[in-house]
Image 1 (tube, rainbow, N blue to C red):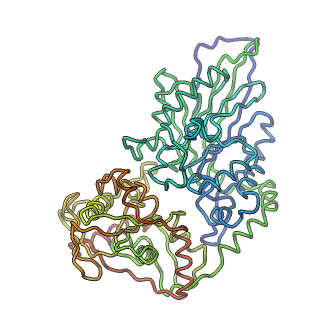
Image 2 (image 1 turned 90 degrees about the horizontal axis):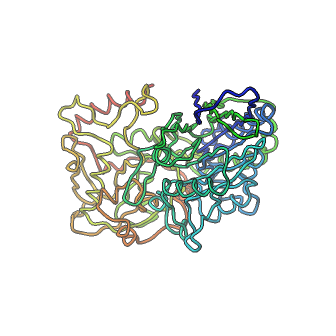
Image 3 (image 1 turned 135 degrees about the vertical axis):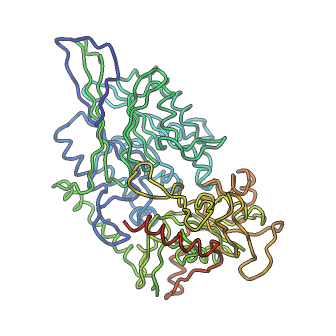
Length: 573
């Protein structure tokens, strides 16, 4: 728990009274509406059901002085979200119904909410009985915010302002047709503007920033800064509290701004395993003015929270729950062998090459790029159901086909493997770039994001672990033994995220500007990759996925020794 007094110089007053405000904050729920893992067909922790149980109990103790806030990325992530977005188009959006039932007061839009497309996020926003904020999302036709920029709440005579922002990196991750007509302004600059407006027009007693952008680090380009919460807290005066998300990192810390004021910044993490609970005590003088306030922040684990309110939620949403369960449990084919994503870190794998083959088939491209999307996931031999595809492909990405030269392909792969492996001087040296996790030092993981560990299909190549960054890749030939040329142009299939500059493999890696990337695009699929995977497996029926073995780490004996050692470090816990 963390405590601070945000205003100094409060005189001791005999008749001073205290008014209390309680804030509960969730973020990055990503489809976890029910405490059930539809991918593994078992009960699980977290979910909006648990949030409802916790909030409903808290309301009894804090009636009339509470705010319930969400930080975005509500509409994507699990079979639930996929089903509600794709199969419930003629009914009220189920997620809006759930959030209305719980009693959210306000939320901010998230990048994965935008990714679902205008039809879906507009429907969701319109059907929520609370405002969805996005002050820095500008409608280019009007020059005004597309989403509501802020909301004012009155609690016990106190005036509370809530202003919301979203990461401006969206155009570099999501196809333009999804966000066309919108401009995503810099968070810090937008915050300075709206804080000034709110202070002048409203004179609130307390200002809360809700930011769908991580604390710091992330991708920084001349066009945008992905994670700007720390920068905004430090350089924009006027926030009394910042609630943030996007980076999925549970965190509670104090940031001192340029006016030497302390701003508490809280992120409860993802999937509704935790909620942030903020208690604010306002000291009121005899003229009913706020003299000072004290803010106490904590993060509460609610992963297994259960009471009569959880039971009421379960009963109320029993029908949509069973709708999703029927959809997710539908058999679509049979695997004759197990596929495991962890194999993908150590060489060619059946898991990755199943997706590569699908992308080559759908696109007709010469090459395919893809990366693991889970640190650890597998599909067992036997019946394959719809739910299993969510362990095979995580996002609702469409498939793009671009033109790249041989040299650009090599440079792209050089950057990918530099994110992934390091230079070895002996077989006893570390191979993978792994180490203690930043937010959990007791756990070992990858130093970089695994979703940027692209490998290729359609070519044969070697990755020399002895070579330095930028010199590891040797492309031997096309997969069908035709010659590969650095000067020739090839067609390459990749995800929408990658084709829009995500991970910077096309920009910093291949050396293309965002404008050049757009000119290289040949085609975009009508449906998302998971849709084609479902059709592919249904059409074949019975599959024995195997690695293509078109690429390898060399020296092979070094890689084998390091792989055996590092598998244990990463996965034998």
